Image (cartoon, rainbow, N blue to C red; front, side, top):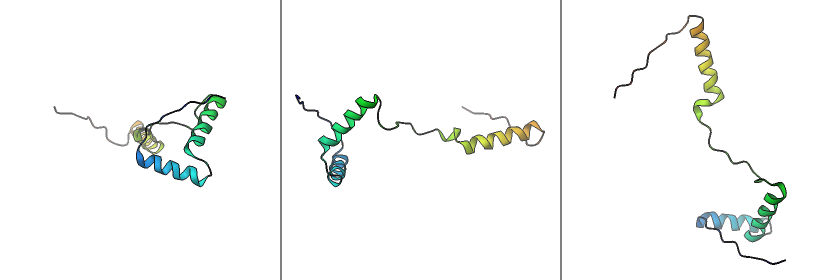
Length: 87
């Protein structure tokens, strides 16, 4: 099988840590990257989840707090405030 070179730029510290990890598990970075590429092709997806940090406003805890406040207003408890923004 013909081979080619694949060049990747990364932070120096990340590379050192990655090389160290690979050594601990008995491989080098090239083998690890090849395993990654073959897994992507076999599974037709990245073998891990990529997600943005969730907006804390929509956390379950905050949504529950908002629901309790709405329920209190619906039964006549609580005070509704107008928010004014000065520019």
